[in-house]
Image (cartoon, rainbow, N blue to C red; front, side, top):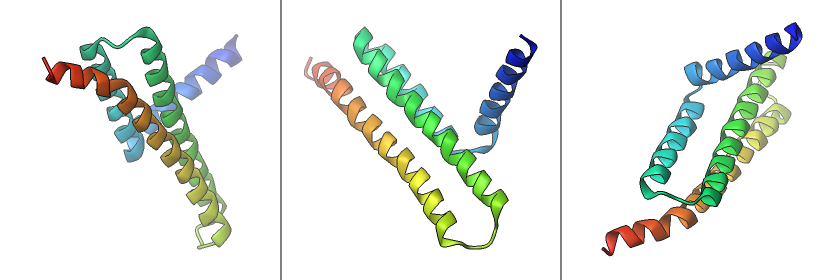
Amino acid sequence: MTNFFKAFMDACRGIGIMVRYERNFKIHLLAFLLVITLGAVLQITSFEWVLIVLVCILVLTLEAINTALEKLCNEITLERKESIRHIKDVAAGAVLIAAAGALIIAAIIFYPYLVAKTSK
């Protein structure tokens, strides 16, 4: 159980590092908090909550993986290498795909609620 607790604490420390030092993670976290607030105000359904939370978690997770890959690449070499650039760009592209998908899903979910609110 001690190893499990240590691993859990290490993972929490990793999240703390992301929150403290990584600008893009902070941006995604802020977007997540805004979407959660909007969902609460608009009283979205349970299924819509599941979708919103899943896509937000996906974006935050990919941002963390992207950051880890960037740091690992920087540890391997600081010289400009095309292969390292490709690795970093592909990881950043994965975050962009997930964020765009999350935005589309949020628009699909929130649009009808916002239209209904404005037409009253």
